[in-house]
Structures are given as structure tokens and as C-alpha cells.
Amino acid sequence: MSLKRVAMWAGAALGALVVLAVGAVFLVFPRVSAAPDFKIEATPALVARGDYLFNHQFACGGCHTPELEPHRFSRVNDTSRIGAGRHMGGKPDFPADIYAPNLTSAALGSWTDGEIYRAIVSGVDRDGRALFPVMPYPFYRSLDPEDVKAVIAYLRSLPPQPVTLPRTKLPMPLPIVMRFVPADPTPQTRPGAGDEVALGRYLAYASACFECHTKRNERGEPTGTPFAGDNVFALPGGGIARSANITPDKETGIGSWTRAQFIGRFRAMTPEAAAKIAPEAQDADTEMPWSNYSAMTDDDLGAIYAYLQTVPPAHAKVETFTPPAK
Image (tube, rainbow, N blue to C red):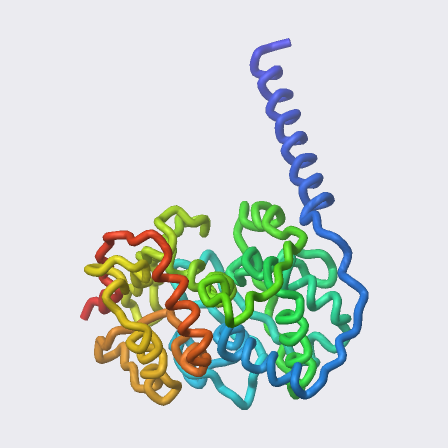
């Protein structure tokens, strides 16, 4: 047999092995447990708690609620369409058009509470398909189950929004890689207010402080010093935003900030204030969902501040905004 024919057969065999391997991945992964079987009693208190978590503390509404002005990221949510989903495309650093799905009963009405719970904490839909981890479910898997149940109770209370968004389509090899991301939850009990630093740590991860304020590579893997910022976000208007250093370094972080200054920074960015940011005028633009976080309680914001003061300081000056070229 000629060398050319041997090479051809070898190449065909290798191709077949690759196909089999990919097929095995799709058959076996994501590897998560079945959705739990429970029904949440949506009391008024639980729904109110879920409202606070969804729209403010966890800022779920920052992605899953349309904006009043599409593609003006981190601005003002359209409160008449809470949970209706949002097209998150138009960003150069996203690999494809990303759609945060509709979470109202128009889309989730046939889902069980357990299926929604599993989607939040494990990152798979009711059919077992992996969710794109722009949703930080790797951190949600450690949430207190009572917090997750409150969010679900709130979602059940929302009026249906008859919005059908396309399914996100990702280029290869992302559909394969992301199947390895979902995992079973590792729940913890939410620390009480008496342990402020522990509560702050819980919130710093649940509210995506670590997710955004830690530099990541092109695959989304954290590579920088935790909370030292410099995570890059290409903005629809053409500018570049970079997350700030929020370690307690006194020169380049928030080490010189008082608790009151930290809380005041959030209070200053209400929806009304956020609506006035004008990228076309080259005002400082950001990916931070300030308008959601601005309504967090003083106790919760103060707990995050207390925790951040305990992390190792990193001397890292960050240019948080580069305006678009004129």
C-alpha cells in the first residue's frame, strides 16, 4: 500500500475518532443531576425578597430586562417589561449575538420550579442544554437555596411578556467547551448580618463583583489578581471600558475610601443619573449596572465594602474608560 493511501486512511480514522469524541461529549455532558422536585410557596414576603434580589442585589434584571435605549449597556431598565429578555449583541468582544432569555411565564410557564432552580444554580435548561456562562452560574451554584427560591417566586409573579428571542448560536468550539461548565450546586447558607465580612464575601461573588472586577482571558477564564480590575469591555459606542481596581490599595484601589464614600458612589448612580451618561459626548461609559445596584441596602453595600477591605491589596492603576475615536 502506498504511503499516500496510508496517510489517507490514517486521516480518515483520525477524523472518525474526532467525530466519535465530540459525539461522546454531547451524550455525556453537561453532567448534572436531575432537576429537584419541589413547589415554591410564593408568599408576598418571598416575592418581595425576590424582587430585591433579581432587580438589585444580583442585578439579574441588568441582562434579562430590555433597556429603554437598546445597546446602551448598563443604563436604565424598561420596568414595564421586567424579565422579558434582551439582545446583548453589538459588542466586539462577544463571540456571537447573545440573547438573555425571556424569564416571564410566557417562556417559563411550562417549567417546574425545580427546573428553573437547576438552570440558575447548575447552568442547564429544562432539556439539559448548557447555558452560555455569560450568566455567572458558576458562582450561583453556591447561593443559599432560599435566595434562589425567592428569585423564582418573583419570576412567577411577573406578568407574561410575549417575547420570543432567538437562541444564542455560538461558533465552534464554544458549543463543546461550554458543555463542561455546568455542575451540581454546592449550596451554602447566606451569612447573617452579624458576620459582616462573611456576608460581604457572599455578596461579592453572588453580585458579580469578582466576575467583572477580575481580569479574564479571551475564553472568559480569570487570569488576573482577584478584584484588581482591568477586565476589558468593548462598548457599542466604540469606546473601551475596563473594570476598576476595588482592592484596598490606597493609591490605585479603594483603600482610602470610607464606608460612606463607597455606599455614596452607588447612591449617586440612580436610574435618573445613569440615563444622563452620554457616550456620544465621550462621557465616561461603563458596563457596571449601576442603576440596578444603586437600590441595594446600606447594610448589603457596607458588607461588600467590609469584605473588600480584607482582600490582598493590588497596586494596579486602571484606565477605566477609553473614549471612541472621533
